[in-house]
Amino acid sequence: MMRPDLDKELAVAGAATTLLHFKHLIALGVPRATLAAQRVDSWGWGVVNAMDVGDGLYRPGDGPLHLLLPVWDGEDLVDLVVFRSGDPSDWRLRTGLGLALGLERGWERHHWEDEVEFTLTPLDWLRNGAAGLCIVDWDASDISMLASLPRIICPTRESAAQLRQALTRPQPLPPIIVKETRLAA
Image (cartoon, rainbow, N blue to C red; front, side, top):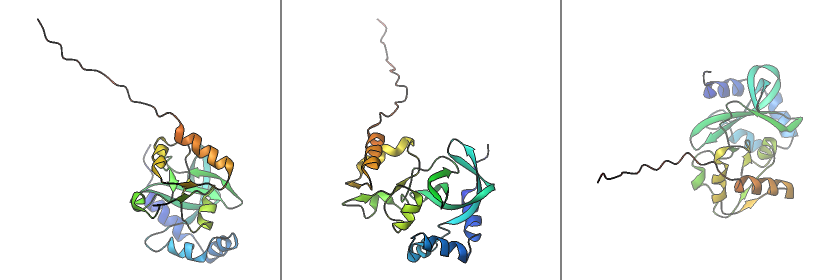
């Protein structure tokens, strides 16, 4: 299967937004400044018709209208996440390679010297000014890297327990082979 052109899909979704979409997000509690800031350098959000294809993934082109957000890993666009505003706790990824919203542009040097706030859904992340983190793939193999954060603030006891469980999950090890050199007598 060919890797989707995420930059192109993000640009198409961004170009599809209208004033009605802006007003809808503002009515849902997303700050105007957040919507504007997400578009400064490139399309930071958009809308797309999307269809669930299983395994937590979607395909654009068919299905109902969804809000779309880019998922970054540093400077690299690695995934897109879609959700419906009426059910923001049910989202889908395009490639399955994204970990969290909020990991863009050198996140390890980010302003998180003291604490990082987690949000439960992508819509909550937008409502929070696109600040902090929203995990979009709880099964991602690199979720353990979040254990290096100084302090984590979770919105509920349940989300704190879910995060604790994810961070303490045993990590699979690669096959380890010993190559001994034997000296002949």
